[in-house]
Length: 424
Ligand code: GUN
Ligand code: ZN
Image (tube, rainbow, N blue to C red; front, side, top):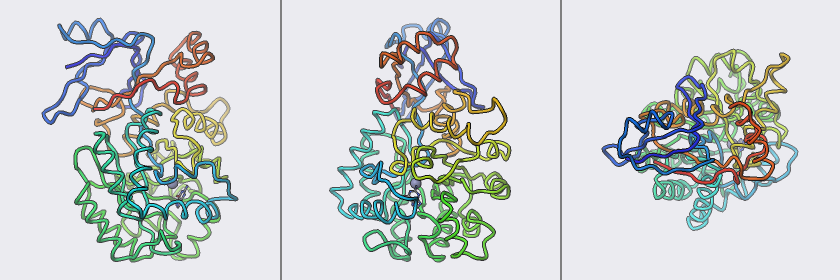
């Protein structure tokens, strides 16, 4: 058993931020050696319950749940900041050529190691991640995540049409490969498999049907894809699937909406789409830096909230411009101002933080597992330095409330504020 003393930020299971200016987090290994939170709260009261506890003290620092990134692409870290008119030319000119290189296992392994270093530097401890269509890219991802003992989710990208040579896969083989990878990696330690049709335009009906069948046969797996990101993309889907009511309902028709299904973007939605998300327990990965960078549009927070649709934050690197959860939360705040039109109504700092930790965990179906630092959850946490830069130190010292402290970090923070990451 081990104690960690510092300022302590946690979340209740319904998303309320809980804060102790002098807190104690107590961690102990479970029967398989996974370190879990056993107690947390004010230092005096918690320490009294654990006489003789070994305590590591980080004065002036903040312990907080590790961040959860609901959607990003590890093979795209080399194309962050590639300018394009919009999504479709960006995919054709930058993304697919970069991803074609992942047929080479050595390249995949090198990028995967860099990727996990970058997640750690930014305080991200769990991520739902796209690799490429090459099984070697999946093996490289899981092998590295497993070595590091991380809770990570990924799965081979399916794209058997409207994709160039080098990334396009073959329908039957893609499904055989996916099933073999599920058996190899899903549930191995903390690793989880996501069935990953890239997006409806890049998969034949046979491939989408096969993906839905796998999702039914392996109900513990995740599903990840993209939907309703860009107007040209939406128009294209309407041409390809003329009988579908909407882009989202294409996925419904193939059994690809269910709990543990996470769709990136969800921008060009109507009320029926949001109701369908809610009814099926499907979650949205909101990717504000990507949507601003590619000019895709603005996620409608007000409507999502009214519809009761599960959602959380994502970097969407490399359409997204930063690995930093602070940058993503700040971009979400900007977007919230745009989409939530009632005066005075925008996203509060505690809400932004929740949607990148416990709220994102809930969207993944990992409520009670990660994201809150509640007793029983896995001890993945970050140690933040609220004095990491001169301006941040000045702002943090003047914070008169938890909201002011969190807002200062969201607006001024980046990887420099992440002093250490501790994983279970
Ligand atoms: N839609 C299909 N593929 C992609 C991708 O790689 N990035 C983004 N942002 N949207 C997509
Ligand atoms: Zn994406």
